[in-house]
Image (cartoon, rainbow, N blue to C red; front, side, top):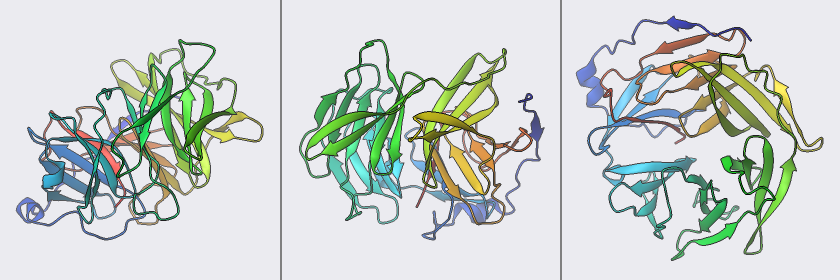
Length: 325
C-alpha cells in the first residue's frame, strides 16, 4: 500500500442555511446507509443529522438526549448515559420511547457497550452489555431488570485485555489483545465463552505507522476486522481489512468490499450495501476526534478525500457517530 493522499474538496455550501435550520429532522424515511449524527452544544443539546445522498443536514433538539453520551446503538435504538447522574436508558430515535436501565457504578470511559438487538425485536432477546476491557468482566442485563449481572472471562495470560466487541450471527464476539477472537453466548441464563479464531493477523504496516485502531464489523454475513493506521501527527494513513474464516480459524485479507460501504466513528462501525446515489461504494467513511470533516478512503486507489457536511457544527466539544433509523 502506498501512502494515501488528502484530496481537498471544496467546502459543501448550504444554499439556504436559515431554511435548513427550520427543517424537522431526521425525516422518518428509510436509508440503506446510516445517518451521520453530529452533536454539539455545552450540554450536547443539538443534533445535526446529515444525509450523504441528499447532501443536506437537518437540525434537531431531542430533549431525551440532553446532556447524555451515546454508549452504543443498533437499528435506531440508543444506549444513553447521563453525563452527570450516570443514569442509563434506551431511546428509540423515531418514536422517542425511553426504557430505563439499572445503574452501573463500574462504567468508565473505557468500557465497551454492546446492544445485542433492538428491544422491539420479538425473535431475539435484548441484552445490554458493558465490558470492563482491562479486567475482562462482562456486565449484562435485559430491559426491565433491576440490576446488572456479571461474568468474568478468564485467560491464561492476565495481561491480555479486550480491544473491541460487536454482535455477529446473534453472538457477541470480542477481540482479546489484538488478534484472538472469542464469542460470548447465552446458554439458558449462563453466559459462556468459546474461541472463534486463533493466531495473529499478518499486518504488513509501513515503518512510519506509529499507532493503529481496530474495529470488528458484521458485513453482509461476514465478520470484518478493520485495521486503521495513523502516522504523525494523528493523520490517517490508510486501512487494512480482514475477513474471519470460522472454518479455518484464521483471518483472510480483503482487498475490495465491492458494493459495500463501511462507516466508522471513533468507537463504532457500520457496514451496508448503499443503493442511493452519491454514496461511495468500496469505500470507508470515517471521522476524527474534534474534527468536523467527513473523510472517505477509497479502497481501490487508497486515496483519502474529505468534505464538510455540517457548516454550523462547533469545532470543539462535538460528538460524531453513525446511526441507522
